[in-house]
Length: 569
Image 1 (tube, one colour):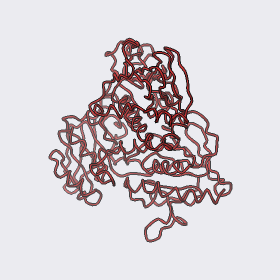
Image 2 (cartoon, rainbow, N blue to C red):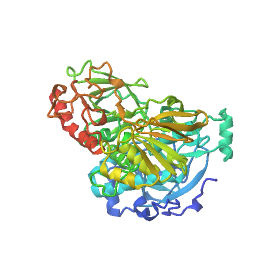
Image 3 (spheres, rainbow, N blue to C red):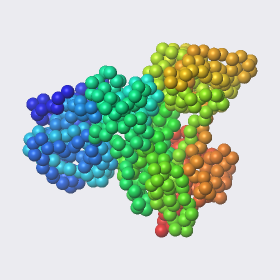
Image 4 (spheres, helix red, strand yellow):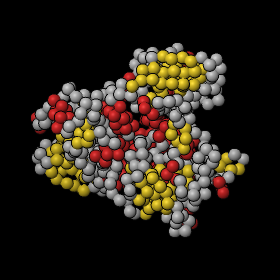
């Protein structure tokens, strides 16, 4: 598609074909600022001038911040790494150019070019965050627009990296899942369906079954890791971070994001790490219906996405995917400094560390599971996996809330769900509302006292059959099923803490409280036995393993951090 010309767009015209979910929210997507509001905003930025045809933003390059158009017109367009360009909108006086990336100065998602002589107010990321907080009413409108624009970009299918490969291949699904869980626009092109994609695949020698990814800045990756893709997209920065940080939060699940929001909003310098995506296990929940304030429910992904934006709004730096490798506590309590080493070799100096690394789902005792992970064995139930299960039978293993929410979600796609539970029922581990719903859904067949006993197939083509055994009758059932979803308890993510001296309980969860003891079964604090090291959420011994509890602990740990920093100063 050719690059749009000025004639294609008239000032102020929105040419984006919005998804149905956003069609009625155009005014929120593209708000018109009044003269008084422009005057209020002006103190946070500086005026820049651009000649006709000059770029304000370039997709794939770091964004300088938010632009408020003062004179002339700026047209925006969506461009992918294959050179396809689609007109998006034209902005004139009183309209602004920005989306979520501008909160942190990450790569721009669109191209923005001056149609004529343009004057614009440039508000850099730190001043944009200051504006949002200082001007509450304007800030609310701006943040809403940033979020809705990101949604529009995701659903447009014409922004972000292009993944070239078979849509059903494990590596394509792995990269898609990574980008989807992190709310990053992208699209998949099957070889043979696009001439430019074919040329790119041939040029970079991608053999059958391999994956080529073209980033918006033109960089090309073959079979990349999530870390390599994150660096290419600017999601993961590469600077050393040699400053002394107030709080490093390891884990961006509900507990970690809550800690980040409350700590950053109180002026602390916060860095958050996660090796996968924001939201943790909670993001796998298709609908959380017992979280306070959401009577109609909210998906775990939506709740986590809002918290992710909120943390950035207050200035928290979020590094994804970045993995903690080791914590050095040698100077804890003496110099009030800890050192956290990442798997990429970087070393972060910090005054405090909040362990919010959560837990990972366990593998049942069943041979060949590892062979088929990402090839029919799943620990996550998103729309990507659900589409592959359309009108087929699936097996779901587990009896907790996450398993129940996944079963309800998948029941809208699968013809039948065999839900395997080791115990005699669901009451011991699942909320009553979910139990009632599962019993009311006709295509969920609950099988108690039953465990997964075997899987068969060829790894390249996926599962071909699944077996399970009733422990009471010893009867084994085998069916030609191609997808198994596992939600069978969790082990703490604490390997990176080995050697630091942090105390664990018998199951490997972090002990907290005075001298790592509890009073009346209730933790007395969220501090570990190492000065300056705290634990919140699922990784903490004695936590309630609920989203609401994790968020509460994230908020509660911040006053303790403040007290520690005051005493240690």
